[in-house]
Structures are given as C-alpha cells and as structure tokens.
Image 1 (cartoon, rainbow, N blue to C red):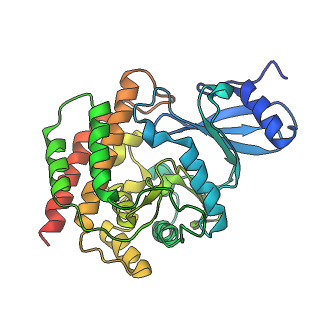
Image 2 (image 1 turned 180 degrees about the vertical axis):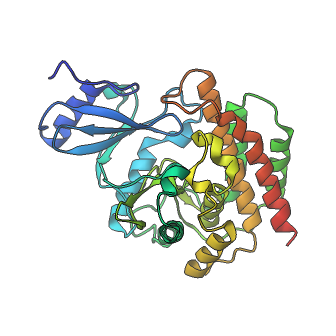
Length: 346
C-alpha cells in the first residue's frame, strides 16, 4: 500500500482501500480521495484507484439528527431505482459494519457531469437552458413519484399512513434536538402546520431533498439529468411534500445555507407558480393545498439549517461557507408563515 495515500477529514482511505479491494476482487492502484461536498448532509468523497472512480458517502461528523443520515436507507432506494427509469448512480457496496471505518458508508459509481450549486454557474447558461433545466427537474420529480414502489422492491420502505403528520412532529422533534436559540415564530409555524394537516393523499417514493444541486446534469445539455443524488431522506410518503420542499428552495432565504447565491434561488429559473403548474400538468395532481406543503418545506429546511449551524458552532463541519447558515433560519421560518398565509387566503 502506498505511504502517500491522501486522507481527507472523515475518511479512512487505507481502511476503504482494503474494503473495496475485497468487494471488487482487487484494485488497479492505491486509492486517492477528495472531499466533494461536506458537512451540510452526508459527507461525499470522490475516490479513484487511477482507472475507476467511485463516490463514497458517510454520515456527517457529530451528526445531531441521525435519522436523516441513514446510509442503509439511502443505498436501498438507489439500488431499487436501478430497476426504473429514474436516473441514479449504479450501486457498488454498502458497509454497515462500523468496525471497518468507524461509521457506516456506501459506495456508488462516479457519474461524470455538471453540478450547479451557485447562481454564477447557472447564469453561465442561456435563459432557454435554465428554463428547460428547471422544468426537467420537475419532470424528474414527477417521474420518481410515478415509480410503482412495490414492483421495485420498496414495499415496507416507509410508513405512508400518517406520513405528513409524522413529518410535522419529526421536524419539531429535530428542532428540539439541535436548536441553539428560541424562535417564537418557529413555534407558531409548527402550530399552524399541526392544526392544518391535509387528509391522506397518494403514496409515492419521495426524495426528501430534491433541488438543482442534488442533480448531476449533462454538460452538453443541462436539461438532461444524468443522476439524482443525496437520497438520505428518501422514504414512502406524500409526493406533494417533495414538491413543496423543492419549491421552498426557490426562496432567497435559502441562500445563506449554501454560503450565498444558491442556484435554486435564481430569478432566471421558472417561478414557484410556473413550476407548480408544470408538475400539475405532468402528474394531474390537485395542488389546492400547496400552501401547506410549501410551509412544511420551509419548516424542514429551517430545522436542517439549524442543525448545520449547531454542528458548525461545535467545530464539526468539514469545508467552508458555514458561517452564514444560522442567518437563514429565521428567514426560512418567516417564509413558511407567508406561504401558509398567502396560499390559504386564495
């Protein structure tokens, strides 16, 4: 084994080299690894043996919301979707034995392509490309929601009955676990959501974090999605919760979570109403209660942002750009209240 093996924070490259060598029947050379995206969700690394490339995912350092970082669930849904038309990376291995690297981790094939995180990247495209990309993301979400989850082996992957009510309570509980401050408006948002939960609707595979920077795009045509990634919050539930979250990411209140100028908040992308109309067109879904699902999306993002902020305060984040995340939380809560007020008054 090479003595010069690089070791990014959070990844035991030597242990991974032994594991992959056994899983794949050998490697072409010593592993090299680079952090692709760290700290905001599961840590993500690009790993190569000089000829082949993989992506390794592990939970964040000091994860304070462990149910949101279940490696086995993430791997299971991506593996199941190999049997569908939803674009995902090819699965390679799941290791849930913490003796190997201290934490569970998953390995999938590396998918080359373009990941657009910042508005500066997005605005390098033509307006036509940006609009088609925005609609393609909605098409991919609709395609996911139409996958027959039983036939791809995901029966029992979640508990769809009572899903929305549990989401409201779950993210309240997560807030109590990670909060660094008191926010009365968050209490009000939770109370409003808990009091207005819609009747049970359709059941589908939900991604749980669908946005532009969780998609790998074709460099030649950004309206072609090569893979959807970051499935750690996927489950079975109400597809409109997925839509509401995706639309909430359009708000500039989300900018500080990605260190400013998030691609999803660009004014050049189709508006919330345009995206909602496109989803309704391709799925036939009734969006009369969309205000609730938008409010729930804001609530979820606010709690996730507070968890990131808490980890940063404890020195447990990897990478940079975390200083501003805490600023997003009250703005996101305010956005959730506006969504409920604005949509309910229509």
